[in-house]
Length: 416
Image (cartoon, rainbow, N blue to C red):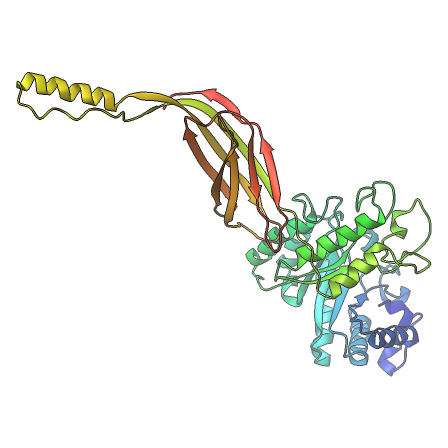
């Protein structure tokens, strides 16, 4: 919600004025179409900040008057996002300033309290690639009491990697949520107020080269993953329409529809998500196996000692022979399997995977292996086993795809 649209030249809302026409039209259109708005408060008028820049934090008094007027005018709006990417130089003039941002949050909170509004206050979505990294920014805001002023922490988890890839920012959100708990706000939900990927044929900071069907797949995966976490309260796709037609500008091509309003595949995918459809996420298995020949004790079958009477010396010799036979050793193959099962959105999963072990004759032997808190650790041994490729399969579930990994074991000879 650009403040400068309402009070372009001077403060007027305190006297009941201001140019609300454009914003009224947006709010009314959203209501007619059943859309819920989360306005982003920004675009400070030139007269309302020390530097006169659109993304400079404003003077407290005029901002509080404007925000209070907006809260009264639009009581149907359930949440407001306070600024955009405040840790990123592009939206923080003259530079990112956690202290200035917390004072801005205080102004917003005072305005809401004065009005008596129940609308939620969401801190401006953080940019993972901002000038101040996300965790450092959160720490600075927390140290100044800023986490106590908001109802949700905004973040924009853009990543080149797929959303359910361990390297992706979406997969780091669980650690961020735990960090909020460590800072005293375990109840503070995350609001993913921007996420998307452009449909362009070259790599960029948001995604690898991406076709329109691939964008739709990424959308489905992102929403399926977000639904796995009860502390993610919102995921907003950026954006509805391509903002321009420039083929060499990735920023132009995030839309669900093209610039001419023709739909991309992601438009239908988004409609499916709204209707409740979710896709299965991809599990990941990391494995290490080791095969080695070992000598193990094997109790050999032996004849039952004669009950006939004989000399004590003969009976003792018989017992010693039986003991030697009982301690006979034989060589077997021992296969150790260790690793981790990662299910995006399910921390420390429990379950069962199936290991297929190579045998000397016949097909591989299928053996169930327990997964305990995401960890796989077991070993097998037998004369019929041999060193060779081991396959481990996760059978899948309602939320996750089946998955299989094959690995060649490290081999060694050992005794034990």
